[in-house]
View (spheres, rainbow, N blue to C red):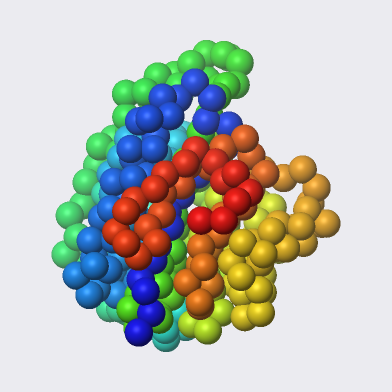
Length: 302
Ligand code: ASP
């Protein structure tokens, strides 16, 4: 019997000019949602999905409602759900008409013989599987729309962005590991651009007896080193904090000065976080049910 634990993140970035209390309330609510699943005897997979839905629904984070708008003025979202118990995953890329891409990623995993759906085909699958289909505009917050308009009036780039891709990793009472990642991608991305988030092994990964990870940051860099697989593999022998730091150093060896972040949990239940950015809001639960939050990992133990 393992003590269930989980950790969530709200995206590696500057997070300047944000009310840190509001940001931490957002990740706290997500961790609490995930924890309530684990506390009721649910699986790690169900817990990370529940936590991610909360973050997707929160307007502050770059996932689901509140996603960054691309150059065409639309939201295109990516998500990945990884099951460490069965070594499988579901992934969606460039979806535009679902409220919660992480639910669609789960349906890809559980209801189709495939692993990745993209674009219109993914939205059509959502409709076939009974998910509500919404119009793209319903995903756009007023704040994001204002940013989009200012960008297209030759305004200087936005400052103080929190690049708020979201993620969650968990271990359940049976010792099963899972991870979830969801994003609207990078701000002002070209239509059709896909980052690391929906790429298995890059934006997320989970394998029992090793670890579960979720990444955030510059996707074009993260995917080159399969950051989450790299970190999780190291968790066979290292604790999560050690493995994440080692994977971060491995990445920096190829791509110095990249903006990146990652959370993880190893098979023994150790939690970890690592980021090169000024901030990465996190919330975690160690097994006593108390949700703790921070705007950044301070280098210490959880
Ligand atoms: N990794 C995401 C992407 O490249 C963005 C982020 O985490 O901020 O799409």
